[in-house]
Image (cartoon, rainbow, N blue to C red; front, side, top):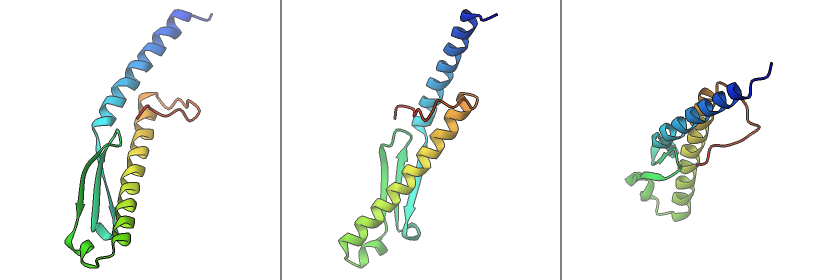
Length: 106
């Protein structure tokens, strides 16, 4: 027999686990790099920029466009790591339940 109270209780437990996972994942930091580590960018799980490091070697060429491309590549590397981490964390929090592409609100 279908038990709505049991279903609601399970939904509340999953909601709590998801909120805990969001908080934990938001505090995680990932580093993206480009050009063999000449540019490094750190993002937290909320995609906030935490740190950027540009080596002197990256500045030696004097090519601003190349440096811009290296920064974008490092950002994208960090961003992709954050997205992967969030996907894995939410699968763990929901016990592998697929919500049809629903993303956590970061």
